Length: 265
Image (cartoon, rainbow, N blue to C red):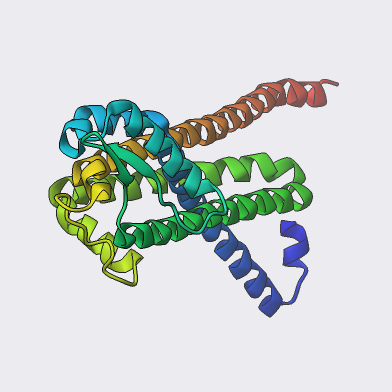
């Protein structure tokens, strides 16, 4: 591929090299997006994370909803995020009385949350599709060098993800309240997210502490995936370098013998 590029006119060479560089940058960014959205998607559907919240923050005591009911409601919410229903309107036993769980304000907010989650899912698929296409193109045009180049992109993408997540994580640990507020201001076009836990069961069931725990969970999961990419990409690149060095040393060791044979009468 490099030889083919060198045979093109100078202007076309520049355009093609810029396109390849842009494609590589987008691949690194796509790795960041894919790892982050995959972690977010896993957290959204992780029943254990909901159960931890209900137990850790005494949600049954705070809301008057029996503990088994909370498990059922958590499952209904996860199903809602993944089905085609526009609204969720569950009923629950609250202080011994069965009634509607959410107010109209909470129902509308849950619709907004679902819309945001669907965008996260879409970003996950787009980034995955781009990376698969990127890998396929390199496999088709670079052939023998494709694995080495893809390993480098994995190394860069994993490293970039680590830097980004660690930076955001530090900000979240220092100023999570401000970050949480800004997320809602940017993520939603209305103020239905402003809920009072004394009035709205949704905010009582999922306090801000839950979202801090979920953020830490997502960050740790993303870091784990990024470390795996760095290990695989870096390990493969290291083995390739060791292999080339071994070939060069072997060729160097054969050269004196060949020279002596050439000078023997």
